Length: 286
Ligand SMILES: [Fe+2]
Ligand SMILES: [Fe+2]
Image 1 (cartoon, rainbow, N blue to C red):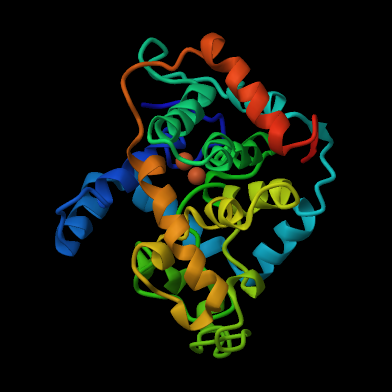
Image 2: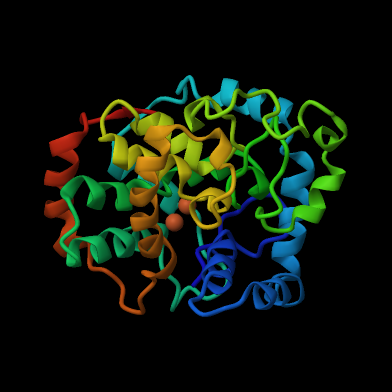
């Protein structure tokens, strides 16, 4: 499945290549050694993508991007407008079988709906990847997708391809490589700067409107070292520890909901119109 994002010359053929890599990496029953083999040999594009991501996501870079985007100064858009904007990313590899971005979002949310998940969660499923519009603002692939990880403290070996951190200038900063780094023990993830990407951005857009559980799903869905491997527990507070279960409840829908049938937007539209109106104002700041 690929819905290619026309990002300038990145190593991924399209952004979905990263999602597919994750689904393979976390396929049930795979051992850690099998993951590792799968990682580098079968996915040279993904390996190159992480090499860039780990080298350039420094604390300085992250703080600069937070400043650039978290003020939400890029205008107002409804959820549909944002989804349609994201949909302008055209697939150039196999247009007959590939899903559009909107279809991909609908598959996630419709899988939740089929399981009778709460309405706020279905909405969360629909919006969770809208932050990928960052690609359309000109951000590189390595600054939009990929596992996220804390910056300003020691890297965990549970972040995929940890060896690539050696090229990050922060790896030579003694403070940033200490266990807690610039943070206090159990300060809470809200105080921790994660590598920049689509999770943090969509969280900022939605943070005034959705329940805490939903905001954790948005903000941390790519933080695999934490939600899948249990790393960085020393930075989490009680709320983080409680909310982890919700992030984990979200994850299988994100990873495994890709079906072969295309959702029928026409038939589903009115359900989603009502759902958006229930929680969100007509337009949001982006
Ligand atoms: Fe995502
Ligand atoms: Fe996703």
